[in-house]
Length: 321
Image (tube, rainbow, N blue to C red; front, side, top):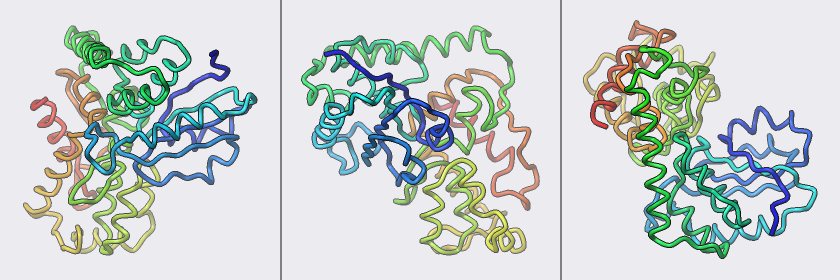
């Protein structure tokens, strides 16, 4: 069976801002832990959105399942011949989406090894194995382990190149618009994590949520990433109030900005973030480079996360990797 459409892998947010520029008839297969702005995807001819987490524990109720695999199978088999491009997306475009793309390539009898060899791609093994089985191109345990070894070795090689002074600079200035891995270490980046049972789409979402007293509002802001998260407090009373009172909130508790309790909360948040594989991959790739955040604020009375608070936590996590 010949594949009649081109495959592109992207973060979900990429679709929101670039889809209108596409001239070809397109479809999208999206894996997300959060709600997707389908109003921004109306130009797509075929859309499938599945909600599951980027985890490999099959016992979790939020993991990928055989039922999701069957939905993808039906979607692929019923794509119109007019579809010339298929976007496969997840929050960061690195794990769930790459696993789906690799399985689809295998389904069409194509080699998917180049995905596993890419140090910026880390296919979710559970998604890949279940989907391949559903598509009739099952992988053996040995095959899966070999592919995971290839992926790990690709990452190790990239890290060794960094340590061999092949980085463009000995200093990495973290910025959402910087080159990888700089951009992937920005709090804007869609690295999801869970803290105190609250799902966060990014660190920025979590930090901005701390300015709101309402627990329900915090949950909504935590689900945001990028500029959408940053702008959630722009020109709001919450922004004015925290700067005036130097008080932040988490799950109904008042927390002084200058308190030890607040520092402990930041530590816990970054600890949870460090469980995100895409985040730690980017951090590993910095090797021994000096990290800085020149656009950050130094005055703790003006920001919920100073340059030092940010960089010191990244260095602590990197040292433990």
